[in-house]
Length: 217
Ligand code: AMP
Image (cartoon, rainbow, N blue to C red; front, side, top):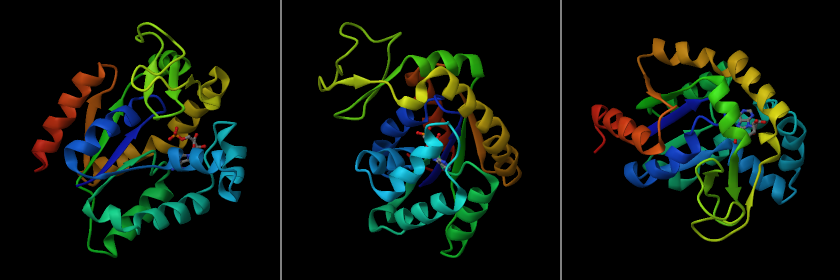
């Protein structure tokens, strides 16, 4: 399957992607994760992206498009992909459309994670990520030690861009630049939405029903 997960930062795309990649046998491609990996390794791409990420702004399209097209040409993506955090602008969506069209491929479904901003701000400011396994947790629901990953005991840390003023900017950018994709994909008959304020388990069930409708087991 070829899926796009569309939603504001903190709407739960990454958490669902972790469940979904097992279920649909497709590769998880998160542009945010690729930038963070490059940043950690201090590559030129990572250093360039940092300028934008620190402010909660989008990395320019030409940089993102080059990176995504290289990733989508890798052999593991042949069996399907789960795009998380891409596309984020109409130009990116048009690029993806053309890229797939040239290969006689198309998207199966775009899943919109629907949720209010205030819920997101609360969620993001309590979000912690494991430095070792990349697991995503919420301090409000995490039981016991708030500094260690419950899965692998790795160190839990807060992403720099999960600081409140940066979160507000990321949401503003989402509404201005990414939200228009909702109508764009709805117009193509590809959009299905889930209520992203629910628990991860409930959202997974909703997504499973959507995938079934689209012919995935
Ligand atoms: P994310 O983890 O998806 O929230 O992405 C973190 C940051 O990486 C974003 O705030 C942007 O600065 C950058 N980024 C990720 N994906 C994209 C994209 N598709 N277009 C532009 N910038 C992106």
